[in-house]
Image 1 (cartoon, rainbow, N blue to C red):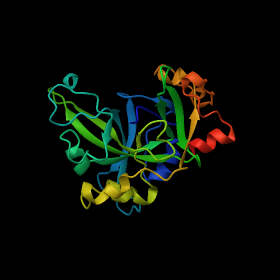
Image 2: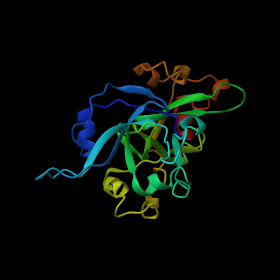
Image 3: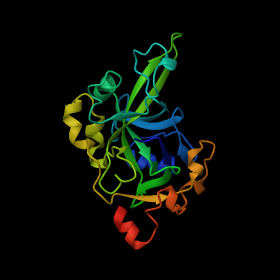
Image 4: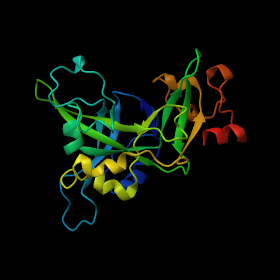
Length: 250
């Protein structure tokens, strides 16, 4: 799954990578949690005359998808992730997968390794090359009884790559830049046409860094959340930062 992630790059870098303009200014975010606003890139409202930019726009949405047919959000589970294997068929995600596929800019994500009776050990999982990545996303606009609209979204997940499966069996789908247009094209491509994009990245694309339990609290939002903190053995400390342990993971 993906329950926390981070986006620490600048709006200008987002504009350059995703070919969008006017990305809302935001500070680095080191601990993005469900129900908070997340940045999504989607197809836009038409190109400006003479523009060579792709037809895309960015917007902030609530992390936690609400299907358009939902009557009462309080009665709905918090849909922060959509399984790639079933999203096109699930009632909650079917319309979004067909009509509103998005990209979610991210610097990496957090995952927890559970072992024994100790506290799950958190890991900061980041691209090995340090670049910003795009998670596959979907969105829905939910209308309140009073008529107000709320943009909501979820991150699409897939089976973890072999080198990360010992930490958790699921991970976000990563859409490569050369596939942005195809994933976002909900007119020319049905969900079945983009299933090949839903596989995990090759082993070694990400690296996993053990971090402190401070990330467990949404109140903690500093850069120190991503600093390496070697786990104790009772907290799933198989990955001790030495060469042998690193090879066992990567």
